[in-house]
Length: 312
Image 1 (tube, rainbow, N blue to C red):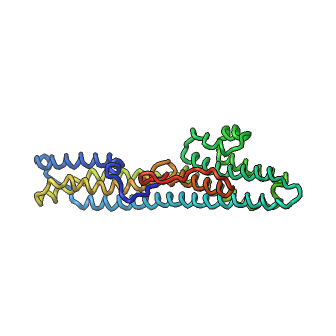
Image 2 (cartoon, rainbow, N blue to C red):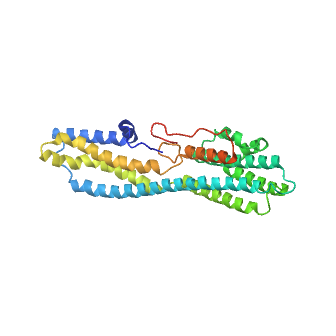
């Protein structure tokens, strides 16, 4: 996610380099053709105005839809942060609440809390890697998954789902062993359900692209607009005897449309591990720190901080 207010102009131009190159080439070519009287007639500016209006509608729709997807993704992960904290609190409080009962085993209860909190942390990291398709980074989770379950975890096809299945099994095993009470699982299952719903929302955004017809026709109209714009500007600039200003003005107008269109394009997929994405690494880091602190662990990871105005 971008935090800084001012952007590097070179990097901004890099996003629309193709459109800028096309605009510069066509504008200079049209200028040369008119200056050498090879082409004498110009197109009416109304053509560019009408086409630009249609293009603006398509760009506005895509940008609004893209921002809606990005904000929904951030909202879903905000819910994951909150539900993870609630689930951790329930695990700790329900386990400790049975300390007064006969047969209470402190070591078994502490082991259960630690395993469950670690599985909560493993799940958010697994979802992050799953959404970003970083399938070669599963070893990051080895410290959070019980050793006797790690091999099965690696063999599973949907790893966040496997961790939730494992979490559910451990809850009911703890109930059978007396670590949890008979009704403790109900509220834990409620939070697991909430986390599963958040996961489903993230996967829906990940696996359902923005309508391709809007993407295709936006790009098509943008290129047609860039191609036609110099032919509609050269007439008026020639009448004012400042035709040499047509290429830079055409380039500027094309840049404005291209960069606004690119804003929507890069925001429509918020889980691609780019600088414009939802900062999953930072959110997972926050959850990990919070849950370990709730567990009473002194050894916690360093807080992920922005780097050069970006946070991932």
